[in-house]
Image (cartoon, rainbow, N blue to C red; front, side, top):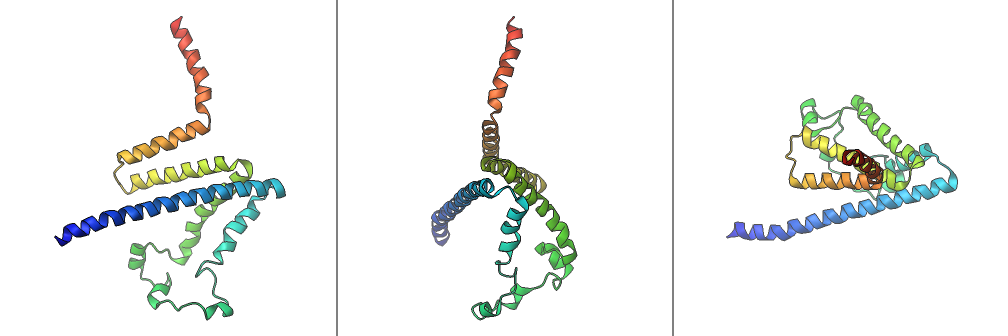
Length: 196
């Protein structure tokens, strides 16, 4: 009896967590769109400076992340001391445990950071050249390709929901790029010779 009551309680709780996840993703999507429009407005007003925008969006906020910058003396008294287990240095972790945790040793960090820099640098260059909607579409397609690669690499099943999402991504992309408008005259021209 206790197992069935747990399952009945887990149903609504799992659904609420699902709703919270959908709400968080929707909020992130709206904020991303707003940031794109804000960047567009700034570029129109002050000129297109992708390196400066990259600097203010990446290295500067990193200083505010806990652990990204040591606390200043006036902040240190307000911060709780973390347990020692949470403050392990990547170098103090054994190589075997490092492999299972996915922690990179310090010499490999530049190799991991280089592709990320190239990617984000490309996005910021794209923001100076295209509209915010185009940038959002390109980033969504990049995430979609990453998701497909992840499914193939980790050999996860490709379900009907994945196919539905794939259809939405590609139909939306084709609608935005107005491929339909350029394909219709081409298809009409191909039909005419067959009719004659």
